[in-house]
Length: 540
Image (cartoon, rainbow, N blue to C red; front, top):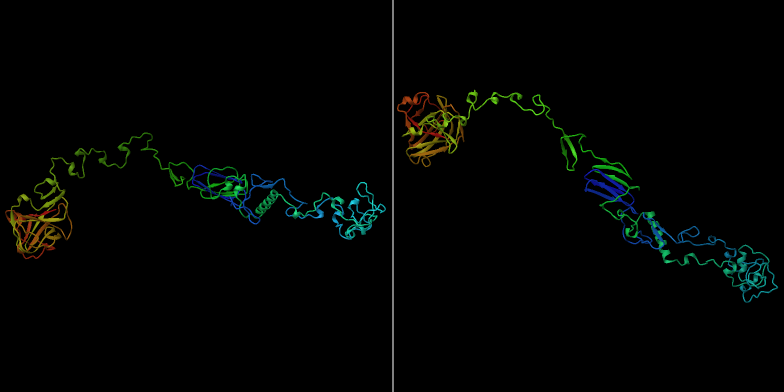
């Protein structure tokens, strides 16, 4: 028998005897599979009855007994005849105490001689053979009141032939004919002369003999099936097959081999040792462990612990002197401005009495708090009062210096008059090194149909050559607008009064009188003339 036990929790104990298996575990997730051969400790058999050629179930009848382990025995019946079992045929050698005559056919001629004597009453002789008191004999017959007679061989039909084949009888001989000899005459009155295979057998005896023979054949051949319902005293396990469930007990005392696989391994009969698979963790005490899906600890760690702080143990209070590498500001009251010797303060940390960049009028730069964006203007809007016509192909380069770094993506110019017949109009942003300008961002080319179509209107255009451009605080830049066509629009501007004011360093503007067909990629403006009119532009 083999028992396979699968468990997800340890330990597990398994024991088996002839009829039971015991599985003891610490949880309810164990499955034991039991299988084995036929017989008392095997699985349950079929229910077909046994025949003379097929092993099957039997029912214990009268004259039979079955022990707890399934041993079938007969009681109160003939167990053997003359030392033999099965279909026994008796011979004279199987019957003790037989006389010589019992083996002779006294009716056959020649089985008796004149010197042989037959004992018996006179009534045993045939009617034609009347005994004579004058006959001599050597043996006295047993019939009371009869005289002894002497018979000749001729007086016994068939006796001569029978006696000639056997041992001679004692003399003297007798004469006459002897007929009607029976077994009682020769001391065989209690002998059963019926053939053994013709003797009647009781029904119970016949059933018992058949059962014994069938069971003996089954045990010898180990074939066929036997219904558990026909055998009394079987345990629960003997009638189960497949997966074993439930509780059983006992000890494996037979030759059943049990093999354990999985997390618990081992093999043997009776009681044997099992081995629990290692989980991978080293024996010890840990503060942090790793547990797998089966609940086993597979790893463990002991994180390093703090033994002291700044050389002290117990309830330690940390002071700034206990921390190395602190900057001076770590121990300085930053709320006192006298304690701050370097660095930059955020605007929100300044006093309300300090003029901020966003509030400086005339710095040409501001912050739109409502829409959260910075902007730069080439001149204050309060100073712009008139229009400036620079003609077809003419450009005014207007210079400015941002006081805060700002990223912009568009330029806005305001037309005080409407344009007509424009074939090109573009806005551009330039860097300026004091002598030359270089184009860094610009808008797409437009005509009268889309730009400066209405007087006193602001036209904002996004950069297309560069989506955005960052203006660095303290650097010089310039903006420009070129219009090519019949009647360019006048642009909002202011006047510095005299030209000298525009050309005094740093220059506020330079003027290209005419002749350009598009925004130049770069230009040396040191030779360009100046004008008192400065165009207004806004960068956002």
